Image (cartoon, rainbow, N blue to C red; front, side, top):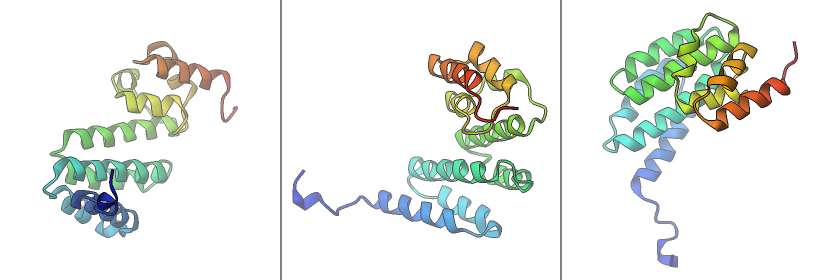
Length: 159
């Protein structure tokens, strides 16, 4: 790399950074409108990447918050045409159910993405012993199975 390339950031990188900043600071009332605007960017991959990062940050912050359900419902309407984003939001809904001890089906977790299984197994979302047992036995990857086993051996929050 030569000095002439330093500071020459591609336009999509600058837009990505601006989108992340805007998404971090957007008022709840304007969030859906901003997400829709980002998704109209000409670089669909970059836009989707910004939105998935936003979903991950926002969902993690709202996981135990009663506002989560309304937020997820609103966002679902905006991202409905985007399969990856829709799946990520659905997996956050599953992680919330597991975290709060609500009803969830084992097959939802065993068929979830590697990301979701790993998030649940590593305690990035407070995970129930039932979920850890299921993932220790039926997690898709060795990494998930091992993380779940460790979670069972060394619970972060003993009952």
